[in-house]
Amino acid sequence: MTKINRERNARLREILTEEKRRLWNSLRTELFRDQEGLHTQFDIPQDTGEQSMLDLLADTGLAMTGLLREQLTRMDAAESKLADGSYGICEDCGKEIEEERLRIVPYAICCVKCQARRETPAYPPGTKM
Image: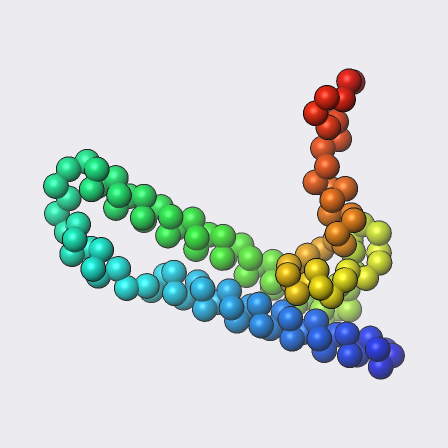
């Protein structure tokens, strides 16, 4: 492994470590946040509106933890790729993914160009088949 590759891998490892730390902290906060004031306000819901508000808050919390869990799973996959030397390589074209993209989306599996191609519909609106 060349010096440039070792330096890039060290930077990529730091990106993954920081993002994983941030995600775990967010998940912990979401799971254990203090909702005591909210619960005392709605201890005994007076009407369906208050009950709906409690249900909405609970659902929102569950959705957030689900999203964070999914991102952490992707981070684990990215760490495995880093260990085997394939992290930061586009799965479609095989070129290096720009570090700036990996700073924003550390678990990205494609470069920007290939990701745009994946997200473009096969038959864009207005196209005749």
